[in-house]
Image (tube, rainbow, N blue to C red; front, side):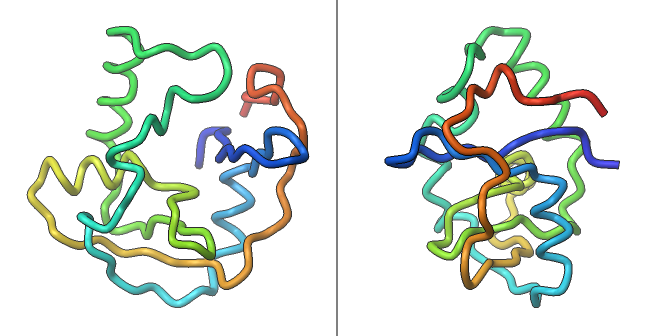
Length: 128
């Protein structure tokens, strides 16, 4: 079971959010390929702490570490049409920690419509 989580992106319409559980379902039939970890731009960006009231506290970093530790590298990460990560950064981080050069990925040919437009990340439903 996937915990409730969202992929966010700024847009002229305001902040867009995709429910990752829906992205997983939409990507189930996309062929899996392998991508080089070094090609993932988000590794050098503020990926987890850009939206909402989250801050890189020691506690939040430990929480992310636990998600990294428990992630399953056999599951493909999900990329948008431009090759940016929509789901799977914990797996990307685990791949780096384990010295992997590649990991499985699926990529949308056209991005799905967001679940929320002009949203506040802190007000989205995070209950299971």
